[in-house]
Length: 77
Image (tube, rainbow, N blue to C red):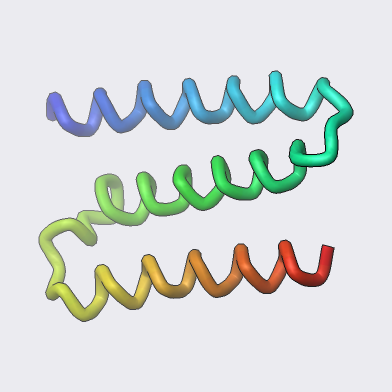
């Protein structure tokens, strides 16, 4: 229960940080927002979907998926 609450608080903080970054027009705002979104995705999958208890293969696949998707989006952008 305690780790879920901590994860929830971290996800809320990351969401607020994304909103703050989006208000500033900089060259790296898109990159920062995508990295924060990837962190939120990992937080949700590992803790709220109990992937942290899954086999190491599935944890590596999810992390690789996030990395590949974010890399493709950043290369296209």
